[in-house]
Image (cartoon, rainbow, N blue to C red; front, side, top):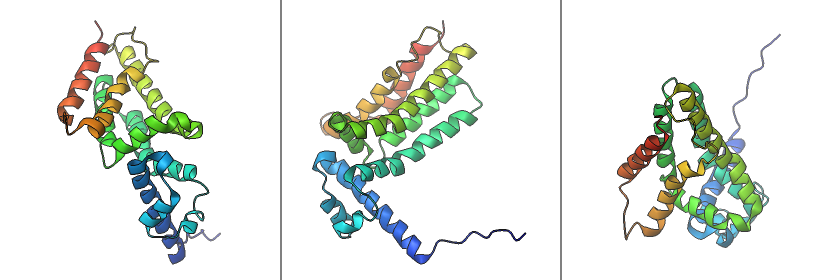
Length: 210
C-alpha cells in the first residue's frame, strides 16, 4: 500500500494564512490601544491594509477576532508553561520560581499590559469574553499553580495549611505590575527584575514549611 504523501500548502492557502495573521495582529494592536468597546473592525481593516469586508471572510464578529488574538498571543505561553511543569524534574520551589519568571516575561512583552488592562476593565460588560478568557487562560494557570503548591506540600517544601484554592493571592502582584507600568510608569517606574524577585521571595517565604 502506497504511503500517503502530505501536500505542501498551495500559494493561495499561504496567502490566506498570511492575511489572516495580519488581521489578528492588527486586531491585537487595536484592542490594546482602543480597548474592546472602542475598537472598530473598520480600523482593524485599515491597520491590516485590507477592506473591511475581507475581515468577514475570516471572522464573523469582533468577539471571534478577540478570541483569535488571545489564542495567538497567550495560548503558546499557556501551553509552554504546562509542558514545562509536566516535564520538570526539580523541586517545587524551583518550578514555582521559574513559573513566576516566565509569567512576568509574558505579561510585559509587547502590548501585553494593554491587553491585560482591556480584559480586566471590560470583561464585566462582555460575559462571553470573560468566560472565554477565564476558561482558556485563567483557570489553566490556577490549576497549574495549585499543582505546584501540592507538589511542594508533598515534598515537605511548603507548609500544608496554605489555602491552595486562593491562587489569586499569588497571581495578583504580577497582574498589578502590568497595570502599574501602563498607568503609572512615568510617575513611579518599576524595576521589573527587582519587583519580580521580590514577589518570588515574598511568596516562597509565605509558603515555606516550618
